[in-house]
Image (cartoon, rainbow, N blue to C red; front, side):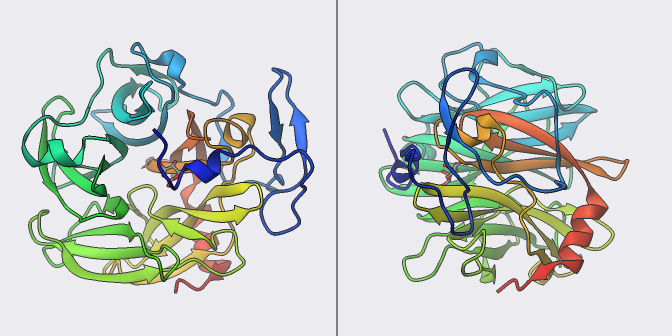
Length: 353
Ligand code: BMA
């Protein structure tokens, strides 16, 4: 089953159409394993250092039949990295699997999936077409899990909680259709939870909004805080990526931005810094992307030219491990110096709105 918004992206690049608009460069290339892909412009002096052994997880590492491994939420829990990744089943619908790691790069997948569509109560109806793109936030000693719930009614976001990744309790469906990419801040503001999200719209390019809740169930005070910039790498749409994490200068949020080319959409990652006291206030947004599809497994795959993040783990040594799905097919990882990302947001900025 193909979702309507994904279908156009499945087109392969035409061999004879080099692009001159901001986005993709140049034509096809034959890789050693024989597939035809395309080269993108290489980022000079990349701010994120890719792990040398990317991809870190593929469908071959999964002990049950799946077509992909991508878009994983991730946290460090009791000194272990826990990754909750999305997989397409062989019927095209998605479930969430779990993989654990000691070092954040080498992961072992659990024998059974972590979360499959519910068969109980209201969740059964709204998760019937699959569960996707899990984000994990630690707030007051419990992990809050947000994920896309697909059904014949559209896509909405479900919220679950766990303390140990063993027992998982679904709390509520926290949006109507159509809305995706909910990330919850790790701290409360004035006693309320805060989240970033991304509603769909026909009259405005898809943008990042903020909402608040006293109880995780009822959300409101919503307003738009960040929009795509015209003729820019993220001009088509933007959406929350990894749950924001605290730095000295503000909450660092790694988001995704999309540019539409004649060969389909290109998904990249960007960085934005939010005020520590008021997350609705954006202090700076990096003008340039921080990651774009460059490796063969990012450029070519189920949905070509995609790097898409749902999780990042800040470390005590001032670095952050960033995780992304490559071409909606595999999981990749990289490392950046947190202060470099912060400085990029503060010194090389574009407007948020
Ligand atoms: C978005 C979501 C993501 C996906 C991306 C690229 O709309 O569906 O899950 O990674 O497209 O296909």
